[in-house]
Every structure is written in structure tokens, then in C-alpha cells.
Length: 518
Image 1 (cartoon, one colour):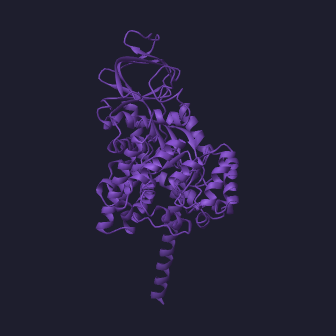
Image 2 (image 1 turned 90 degrees about the vertical axis):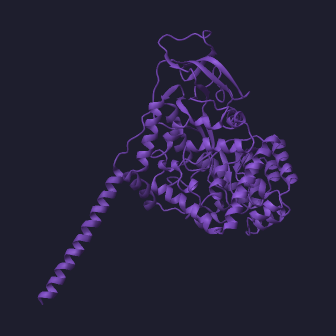
Image 3 (image 1 turned 30 degrees about the vertical axis):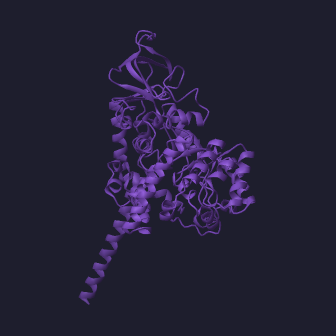
């Protein structure tokens, strides 16, 4: 009896201890969810600014203009000219530009701004000189725990420009992806028209995105069937919405360009369309039997078919966003350059864990040494085709579709130079070309009078080596000067947030309330 009573006492103690532990964990989690997060401090520059004796980088002509003075007032470039020829406003803040290079700030034309981005990485764009972005993924429904909706992103961008938070302008945002009937299996409770399986469903999808979500463009993805795709494009045109995104597997580059798709993302599209089995592959995709045989695409590559795709894009004014970083990670998924990337210091462990799932999935699908070699050759061939597309006259936009905000754009520029673009041509893909794409040349793209004062001050010449875009000494965003100390503070802030347990609680809580799978 005594032994039995002791066992019961121990069981009670164990149950009590477990209950207390659970209560402690729940309370700690609740504190983490409710605890206010520190915010990155925006810089406000009230007085006029003059950058003196600086070398201006003319990205349009690919030349340098030495000994310039650049005057900034009320968020715009008031004047640019040789030292001594411009009027310096009284009380202006002077920045010594000797030995430095001044270029337009950068755009990332393929980003994903998430619901958690304000907690984590939005300031990193500004810290790396990226002041404008095109967002390429809309939310499937309001209050989605993972993907922010269009109006939220626009609000954060407006607050960034107004100096109320540190964030780039979100110039353009797309719908959730139109990706065929399988999407209905992944999004619980989605309307049937999200499947875009028929012309009627595709048109309904466009109307929903235009009305309920208020997006700027419709994003198409891999698995949308042909009938849905062409109906979607027609309905988007009727509603004056652009169509952007992937080249659907069942549609050729030539067809997508002729239909009016404004931009095609990802360099692999050309490899899919430039070998003798391309038509057969598209037919298989229409039957739901897509299989990307990279080895065959490489061994049987037909340059004439690629040239025909380039010609169609030039003819119809279709833009190209290579996003080489996405194929780089596929190619080197098992390599330390990917897995132990120093830039991962900016990633929260939960975000990195999710990313690693995709990376490890790529390895699991093609684990053999021969498969890994094919992935690397596929990546190299895609880079080579980007150079050929450029020489054929296809207009290129720099976009990352990758994981580290701001910083990754500089690496994408390196890939463009490896493709055969000069440093000046690569810079145009992230400055002049985005401004042209949006019809905003009056405001952005060059260091000239009247443009918005979005600038990067570099410590080395980017026309000599594209990697010099990373030697950032100051960023001017809407006339506000982020000097070296401010930039360091922004990067340190993101690193701290990436290690924050309270941020982890805030990441998990929305998913507990509203689970998603897509």
C-alpha cells in the first residue's frame, strides 16, 4: 500500500510538472507573439544635399563623367554639372565624392514580399541599394499567413517612400499564380475557378484578381492548360491587366510572346523550347505528364529554335527576366557555396528551414553524380542563352526570385556579366530597363536633372568590375541619405531579427490560426 501511494504521488508530481511546463511554454509563446518588435529607423534628410567632385556613372552610355556636383532637394535631383557650374543651396549638407562613383539605385524585378517581410528583411533592400521592386506573388485570399496581399505591399512601399518605415517602393504586384487544377488540392476552400482548367474558369480568375485583390498583373505558372492560358490572356487584356510569369509548360515561348505576355521569367524556358522534342514535351504537359529531361535538352539543343524564340520576343516586345540564381541553387544544391552562404546570416532559421526543404528536394530528385553534373551544365547553358538573347535584342530585366533581400540582386548582376553582358549593360537591366518597362523614365534610371533622388555612392568603379556595386558607401532613397553608419545599422537590425525567438513566435502563430499548403 505504501509503495502504491508513492507511485500515485510521483505520478501526480509528473502530471503537475508536465502541466506547468506546458503552461510555461504557452505563456512564453504568447509573450513572443505579443511582444513588440524593434523597427529599423528610417533616415530623414531635411536639408538639401550636394555630392561634390563625384564621378557619375552614365549607365545608358556606359561611360563615366568625372568631377560632377549633384544637388538633391525635396527628394529629387535638382541639378547635375561640373564642379563650379551648379548652384549650391544655402545650408546644404555636403558629401565628398572624390574617388567615389555615383549611380542610380537598383530595381529587383522579381521579388516575393511576404507577410513577415516587415518583421524581417524589408530594410535589407535599402541597405543594398535596391529602392524599387516588382513583387511576383499575390495572396490566394485575404489575411493569408504567408503571402501579403497587394494593398499591404503597396502600403509598405508608400510608407518607405514617405520615410515612415525602411522599405523599398513596391511598384507593381501580381495575382496569386494561375497554375491549373492541381492548385485546388493545395489551397483549402479555394473557388473552383482558381483551377483555370477551362476558358470560363480562367476568365473568372482574372476578374476575381482584378476586383477583389486589385492586382496590377496576372501571374501565370507552369501547369495552366492551354485553353485556360489563352482565355486568361484575353480577359486580362480586356481589363487592361498585364500577364507575366512563367512560360506555361504547355505553351511555347513563341506562342506566349504572340499572345501578349509582357514578361517571361526564368532562363530554363529557352532550353525547354529549343530541342527536337519540344512540341512533344508541351503535348505531354497538356496531359499532365510533364517530365523535364535536362540531359536531352542539352545534348539535342538546337540554336535555331532558340533564335526563333528570341525573334518572337523582340517582335512582340516581350521582356525577359532570367533569375539565374534560381538555377544556380539547383545546380549547386549540394555545394557549400549554396548551403553555407554567408548571406544566410540574414535569414531566420524558420525561413531557412523552409528553403532547405526545397533545396534538399532538388537533390533527392536527382541525387547521382551524373544528375548533379547535368544540373550544373543546364545552369551554364541557360546563362549562355541569356547572352544570346541579349545579343538578339531581347530586353532583359534583373530579378532574383531568391531568398536574401537586396543583396542577391548584386549576385544576379554578376551572372548577367558571365552571360556576356558588359557591366554597363548589366546595370541597365536593373536601372534604365525597369524604368522603361513601367513607363517611368521621367522619374528613374539615370543620374540626371529632375529624376527622383534614388542613388548609390560606391567606393569603386562598377563599369570596371560589376562586383563593385557591392562597395556601397551611401544610399540615397527619395532624397534621404543612408550613410555607411546607417547602412551598417540596417544590416545589423536584420541580423538581430533573424535570430529573434519572438519573431519565431510571430511566424508560427498565423499558421496555427490559418494553415496553408501551396
